Length: 125
Image 1 (tube, one colour):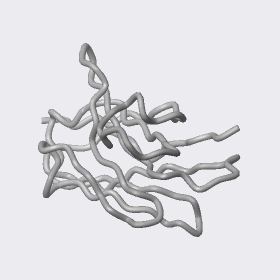
Image 2: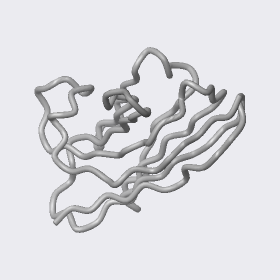
Image 3: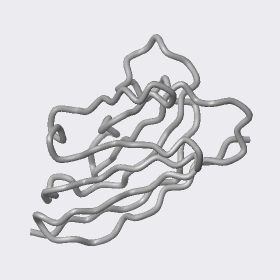
C-alpha cells in the first residue's frame, strides 16, 4: 500500500518562503508523476504543481508560476514544493498525490490514485 506523508506546513508572514516535503513509501513501481494540490476553507481542491518522476518535466497553475518550484529526489523518494513570496491567498491545506499513468491532464485530481493527509500552510497579512 502506497503511503504519502506531507510535512513542512506552518504559519508564515506575507513574503516569506516555505518548503514542503512529501515522502512516499510502500510502492513497488515508480509513479508516472506526483503533484501538489491545495484546498482553502470553503473552496474546492485545486491543482498547484506536478512533476514527471523520471523525466522531471514540471507543471504549474498560473497563480504560482514564478513563485513556486516543484522538485524531486528520486533516490530518496521525496518530492518538494519550494514556495516563495507567499501571499494570504496561498493559505490552504496542501496535499501531495501520486499517479501511475499519463493521459489525463496533470491538473486533474482524478488522475492521481494516492493522496497524503495534507499539511496546513497559513500566510498572515
